[in-house]
Image 1 (cartoon, rainbow, N blue to C red):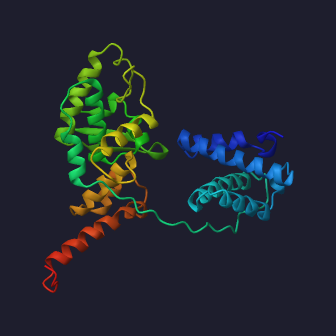
Image 2: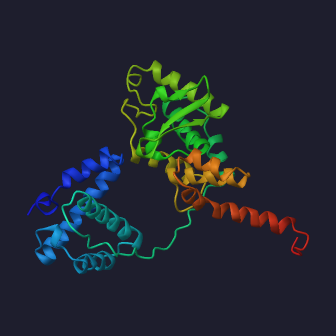
Image 3: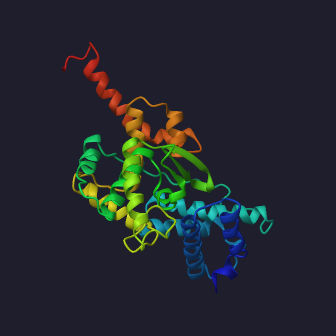
Length: 303
């Protein structure tokens, strides 16, 4: 049995995610992978050939199977979210009358507190750049943009040269669901960008690619390359477990909030649709406030 015979209008669903929901290609691939995995389980365990006949008990069996194989509750919840979205689409298109996941509750997942880099760690990385080679300037600009703008990895990869307005010190970013936002650039970032762009445009191998960040061979940069660059530089100065582009985004938000930035302003800079997403970063700000409170309060005897 093929996946298309099990999932009736799968192609239509994926097109719906792309065209109507404006989901990123990586997100759509994740949905497809989750649905394919579910189809294989249901077919192997229950020989079921039609998704509209799947019961909640069968779905619960899949949840147990995933849990027993060591999949985290957070990952299971994401897979259930994919399945729930598909059933919702089937309801919307009148392909089914009810969803077996209508009363499903997400599993409790432990919240992982991601530790941002300290200002000292970020400065140590940036101060270590001394050369003017293409790759050094590219990597430095990449780190400066992550730290000074808080953009997402996918957003950075998709920046085109034309999105960079060095005259006005502004960067246009295409965020989730094709939502545009403009972010101001610091003078030192503009300086690095000017040197990098000049070098890129003077190289016949690199200048024809419209994207800002390219490989040494002139191809558009990609997610694993960006991750390796960030991990490589920060591994030299930080002992933190996770050293990723997202931690730099986290660091940007935390440092702004620690310096008293308005949360609504940080929300807009990050491209969040709601304050709830931005509030994830406040635990670090609260820790900073607590430290200040303990050191400054007259009733504290441990000075």
